Image (tube, rainbow, N blue to C red; front, side):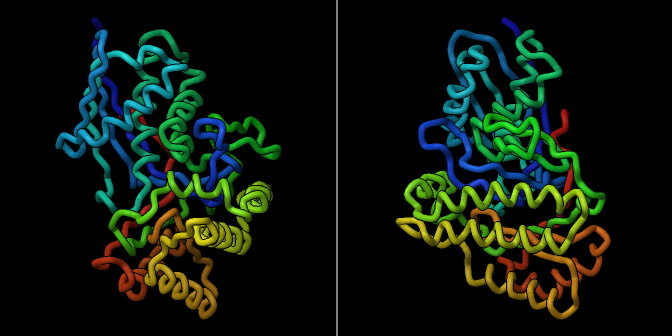
Length: 342
């Protein structure tokens, strides 16, 4: 019986055009396309040792401590990917994983964690002669998607696109593709995550995705997202910061409006979320800065600004925005290059 050991570091990402809603009759297929910045500093590093044996045995350590609560999700993931690689349903898995960002900090650890695990499994598939290098990242993205939809995009940098779209050649609902046509200003764009609330969300993203099936605004939203994908192409290629601000902020607020118009309805923003948004708007109105925000499915704010404005923007964070963060906490990040083998 053979033993394989591999390790990958994969980043989280922040969507600019949001994916919210899945096809109800298929597994992890999005209702609309999405595109994201791949982050640089917020990442998961995973070492996987896989030993061939007849039974399935999984152990997981997070930051060096046993985490049995992760095992059911990994088992579900292995079942979903077994159609591509049947070998995954047997064997002894020893998984050591760690995040470069604090636990419960509001960063999408499912995207970084599931993509890192998918990349490790693809390494084993290559060693077994079941996968060729030319299909490696595409397959890793497909596997990652079956664990967490947004994880499909984390394989690539500086940006990943997921979801079939007529204006994105090669796009697919089953895996993400790298998005290369980006003006220089966006290649090292900054993202400071303002940690407004570090606790667990009242409604999980999985539940939230399901609630959109009966949302009366869903069809219009899916059409809007597809239109915004096309608009964003021109914005990204030309470096149009005003167009970027308008589209990205609108997308963020639309995401949360869908939550508030679901049944049952729910709100993930906190009062401090709105205070941060209003402070950013006031700063932009007063000084003409090209700074904006986006939101994930939670209370925390992703504050976006060009690398050229880094010193001024970070002074604004320390002087004005930190007061709205839990214990004054925030994480500086920027656009990165995607997943890396360790």
